[in-house]
Length: 468
Image (cartoon, rainbow, N blue to C red):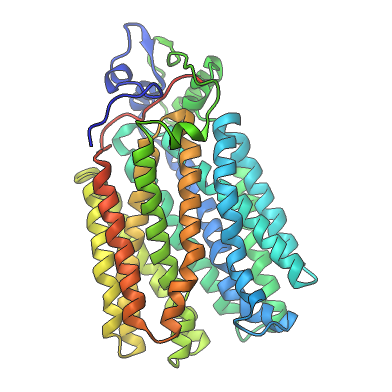
């Protein structure tokens, strides 16, 4: 697919070679390189992402206690709605907050979504009935959908091009830590606390990391790329000065310049969905995120129930979940290396095809031990895919539309997660080959979409866009 520069993009040369005596934000960040500021931001965004993972996976562990508290038989409409409520909230929250971040700035949304996630999480822990709990979980999903969209835009926009992809993958790696955290908490509470109290403690504890996240986020400035694009040159320079101070570097001499003004007065989704230069990559990425989410949640959200129907006790299921989460970490680490060594597209396609092959390992599962091995290998390849995907997508869109694009893509993923129970139920019905074929096909189609985009972003500057 041949790409032409768009009115929302600057050619690479315009970023890499500004006029004599002038500076671009991208050029300054490349000069300041990676240092304590980026490491600190990685930890802040990563811990928030770990907290989001706990919230996303929470209800799968809490549901037995919820069923006992509110007399909900397993498999009823109310129980299934609780499992889907967080995803439904994220489906609406991700595009909404992504657009707000493009319009109002990264930092306000960065702070507000974390605060709302904590508040709604606490409401859920205190819910007097299933209706309040359902609403609280939906609103929690609405909030954390924004944190996931905005974190990646902000992280990408503070990174020099040299290690941008690696750091973006490492943010995603904190998902595994969140998975370990919620599985470990559920395991510690199981058998030690009454289930009707245990699920409330689990929901409350999962909300508390957001308090710490909110406090440490207060010191993070807004994105200098977004600020310069809105004509707020002095604020952009102040943000860059903060980066320089923490990295113990000095700003290069010169005048910081903003991109040329754009006829687009404010970021609009129509620019993503209708622009002849962006709509193709947007459509291909949306199919990719849908397919990867369908397969990931189709397998792993139903895996505990599948194992229990095959005689694996609840405590062993929690331990299995923790082992699978540990297997994700080397997948992330390998992806963080490969995307800088061989490029984003090749890394993604390789991990996606490996995931398709790995799905069929479950056909050989004759024991809980083999199911553990198959789950670990699949987790390795799937989460390596997600890490590389979260690094690649922000690099494909200009700054005025970056958070909106990630929000819409996150919504596509949430659609996949909402559809996945229908495919995952095939596991419980015993039709394992049919279920695995659905998941493998979704991974293969995703690989074809990534290859079809035809763009490699390794070593290239972020498209800064034009002033909105």
